[in-house]
Length: 193
Image (tube, rainbow, N blue to C red; front, side, top):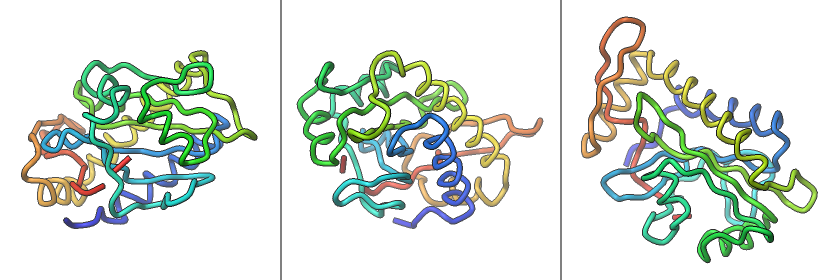
């Protein structure tokens, strides 16, 4: 597995940090959907990280068969919240406790009509408690990440990275700046949520 180049991760991490601070959550992560492995792979974590979390994890994957809320997010585009008031599925609740988060929320990142990945937000006791009321804010933030990804994909070097790193993933075409760019998804197989 090749690591994602700085040309992809630097702006993604900077933007995630900006969005995290803007919406007032303690942690914000961006993960890509690996269709082959049917799992989410975290590319960047920002903010207050829990035990074992890394800003740019080399191996942080979440198999959808173990995380029903994440599976519904990817396959049905259904955002979710996990908190004391809304415990969600056992795996998501266990993850929140392990990461020392009192609540979490996620929304799909949709690029060119397909789910590209997940924007995940988590809060500690000192942060914004995430409830269903915050779902529109988290979903709007995921839309902003999708627009950033489209901008990144307009760059030839990023397209080359995506095409050469993940030939095993489903290919799809994106119209960018009036020209057709071939893309295999900006995801590298690798990590476990």
